Length: 425
Image (tube, rainbow, N blue to C red):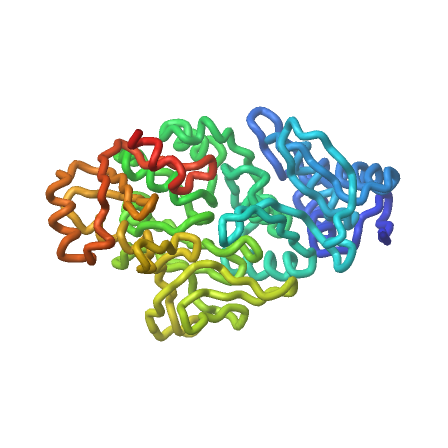
């Protein structure tokens, strides 16, 4: 593997290393990364990157496995690996590290590897390539409007591909990256205090976090002074993000939800006004890298290949300079089921349940041709069943219904259908 020597270290002459070198001179004493009581300036950051990059090259490491610890040194390892063209992967803190080169990354210039559940629920490894990522980050930075005066709060797990937007958002703009305490940020007062303490302007999070804050009316007495909020990882019900829009004056919402191979790279919806549709639109087709198949599935083209998103949408025409269509979420490929010979979508049943008075949210699953459904809210089961009779055919009617205070979610904050049946036992 070739490495281009730059001054004192083995820094590849990429857009990332070039930018960080430039900022080390322009913003020498400005904080680049802050983590709790620890911080590092841009000049200190570049100095450490050169030193760490030289170490990695001398050790002849082919893939750098980085333990998932939320600290400045972890980010330095990530940046240093990219600057010397060594792909990295974030792994569990207790994982046994083995430095090896998987066959699928011997060609091209891999940047990092991530684990994802995939569009069918089967786990897979996705490789992000440097040239494609740099192309995305330049477009992302310009569209989002990152400036050196901005402060980016990172709440997402470093193992998530979406965290790269926070980390490299700093590297491409000269903004300050704040590594937040994930557990503390789940409490409204801690979140508000963190935003205020560091003058946070940009915050990326999951729809689950947005929903929880809205349900708790977290901003009833005080709202965070944010310029932009980014949604990643799942579809978003508009009523919850509308709470944020209404409570935070001037905030701009970006929906970056997309498949892991692009993770919002080509699917960006932007708004600062309350959304009247049921879901926040998945994307605006602002370039030629995405298209919708005849059955409604979004498909993306990236330099690493053709990727089926697993998201089915309906198209809402509109006339703007950058986008002619909005894509409204209909359902997921992996949530299609067969019951007594009929093919149905779980999301269709859930939407129908949410139409009943008093139902805030719902999820369902099918086991042995019977539908099990959980719902949040104060609606009576008789009211829900009556409402469903007029909206769904008989074979789509839930046989088992149960009210819960909070729907089960997995560690990523997404609906966990596997736990539905457990709650009926």
